[in-house]
Every structure is written in structure tokens, then in C-alpha cells.
Length: 151
Image (cartoon, rainbow, N blue to C red; front, side):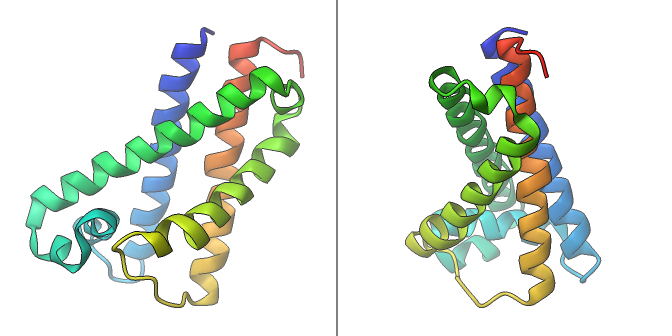
């Protein structure tokens, strides 16, 4: 698989898995999908994102996939210099997911306009699991596919 194809498919995969997780997890807690993606847009717009209707939700979807594209792109680029990232995706991918989780929750969100409220344990656990298995692991598996490195 070419690097460009791995980047595109990896970004789509990570974006869909993470987004679907949020829609299902928070949906079971009574949060509508439009509100989930408005929350992402609130990183740029602040509280006004929640009054913007479908347009701010679509902005949130765009931001979500842009972030996924960056996450996968960084892993692909790093795997060119550090081949272990592509050779050991089942270990390195989840570790990368953990790093991404930390960066998003302890650097990006606090620096954004989004509310940064304390999270219940279930939200923390779900966030960690999706970043380990639905963000980091797919990024690593697509990096391996791009490098054609044997398992």
C-alpha cells in the first residue's frame, strides 16, 4: 500500500472509529450526535458552538477528521525514521494512542476554547480504550501496511 493511501485510509478509519465510539458511548448517556460534534467545534468557537445548529456540528466533524489525519500522518512519518513503529504495531500503536490521549486531554483541550470539565471514571476509561485500540492501533497497522514490513 502506498503511503498516501495508508494515510487516507488510516485517517478515515481512525476518524470513523473514534467518532462512532463517541456517538455510541455518549448516545447511551442521552447525548445527541449533533451535540457531540458541536463539542468538538467548541474548541474553536467556545460555548457559541452549541447554539450553531448543524453548521457547527459539521465544523466539528471536519475538525475531528482533520485531527485524525494529523494523528495518522505523524505516526506514518515517525515510522519512516523509527521502523519499530511499523514492525511492532500491536505494541507501539496502543502506546501511541496513549500519548495521543494525553496530548489531547492535557495539552490541546486545555489550550482550546472548549470546556475542560472533570471526567467521570467511565468517560476516562472509554477515552483511554478508544485511543489505545481505535486510534493508535489503526495508525500503526496502516503504517505497517505502507512499509510492507512483515509482522
